[in-house]
Image (cartoon, rainbow over all chains, first blue to last red; front, side, top):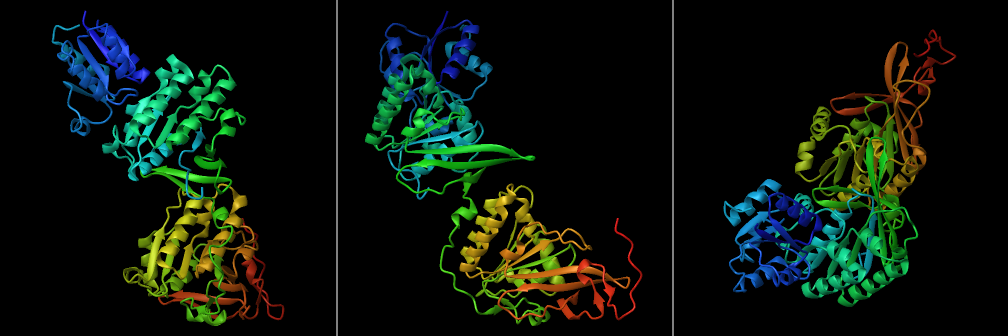
Length: 122
Length: 473
């Protein structure tokens, strides 16, 4: 079973992702911001990270940059989510593999996660 | 609000769902950003950020490039749930400092009170928040729903309260804003209409409150302006006194707009005119004007005349007043025709305001040096009673002209009565008038007829009287 870490400050969005991915057979971990997510990464090694862009305490770009600087986690793909179009964010930050525009449909989320983990994922 | 909010102050924006709190707060935020400020927008139990940004994307003030840099949207709800008010306070402190925020919005503030274990804890949270944002110079807005409790503790503690109300009025929904409290500044008390469109939020201060005192000294006009109709000028002492307010009332088709067009047709670039109309669209007015020899196209092209047309559908009463005065100020208008005062009046949801509104409008127009002519439609073509859609019309205008149809000897005639002409000699006789391709022509006084003003004339006693008219249906 693949493990996905969801880093999202909006509890409604985080719960939506958790439910959708658990329905698909993934194991899902949650963190409300980047700093909390880094704590979780001390005990867990997820196969995929889904992170929001704007969050309190530690935002998505700062968190992703720290993940990519860790030898044992740099290979973990990161899906960056934002309500701001990617074109507006790419110029400032590009340390992620996949961009997911908010709001999204569950089917799109599942498809993006599946692709990021490989076709046999889940 | 006498200039706005005080830097570092804490303000409550309170209102029903859908009243536009979030739009107002965001509009303030993006204006703040334009001046180089930085904004922290924290949601608690509120709509998702993606929905919020989708909605903001339809508004002209929204600046997408500023999002995630100059303005950051984050949720504080999980922190509030897990760590309570102290945790939220800590998060706000860190975020304000880390992001160098100069403006904070807490959207969904009601959730903080629900998280407080006691009123004392809640008051302490407000107190600590005030100290924190004041020290950071971070102006703060707390957006909350109206839970019907007037004595909520935070209301006594904050620097200001803006209350927003939506209420049904017939088939319409009216929106009002009221500044309930504002420390360190005078403010315009009472309710003020507001509207929301693609440019965001527009407040229309209650007209008679804003212009309770005219904006400048009243220089009494001694000159006269021609009405544009020489025969009318002749019976009113040479024209209308400058800076006076006049009304032409009468039924549909009597020729009120004709007089108005002739009056506005005498405008020049040096003494510009404004045609503020409600019912007849500019193309129709231009055609009508052309028929009596007034070329509104040429007058507008030369800058002598501006036509502002309002669709008489669902305008905001106060917005109309401000639009009119703004247009007068912009072009230093000297001649004003308000064609269809009923359009104004129809926009008023509170009839008790109408007289005060027009008294304030008349005073302000007078001190701006404007000579004003209103047209106003009466309901019946014939009849002994005259119904006008405004009380105390005579007290609101200095000059009153009454046009009406009369039936006499099986012929329909049009008569004009000068009811009132302040500070002027005028001929009080009832006169028949005609309208042709050069406008209105006032004829000689009626002789040998009585009861003209009832609409059903009969000959004077000394002359043979026609058979009585049948009762009206």
